[in-house]
Length: 178
Image (cartoon, rainbow, N blue to C red; front, side, top):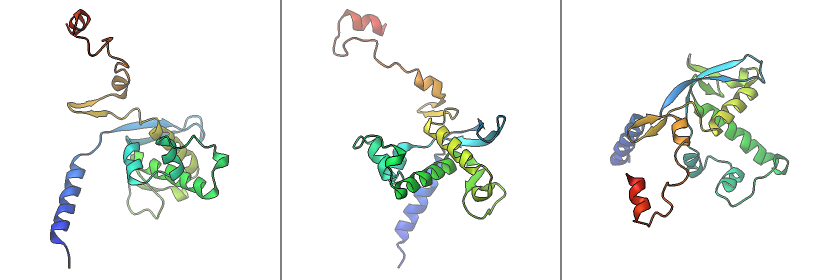
């Protein structure tokens, strides 16, 4: 027997998630490992490392490193299975950061899809997209409560408060607040 309430809730969730589309932008990504003047043009979005961590998508070694339970492991210290997990993760990130054209690893079903199994230099493209995503997709706008801003603006937030003591309510606080 089908749980109609569950089906309704799932459909509602999918509609609401789809309505909260993350910001995207068109990127011209140079990939000099293919050719000095090769540029891959695509629509990019920012990948949430936190979401990947909580969803279990991060390979275990990477997840342990990110949450601080393990020091960074050199690639030569990874088992063959762990190296394959990292490669699969890089492929997944490349496909997720690239909104359009859609990158796939199966027979092409639509005009806007590229099957990377049949593309020369696919490894270079995957690595370049992975590095772009791990650099937090710097060209993609950052969502804020009042709209969007640039990564540059977010990076320039003050590292420390102008106040020397947040608990102080004397003259220095009052003059800084003015």
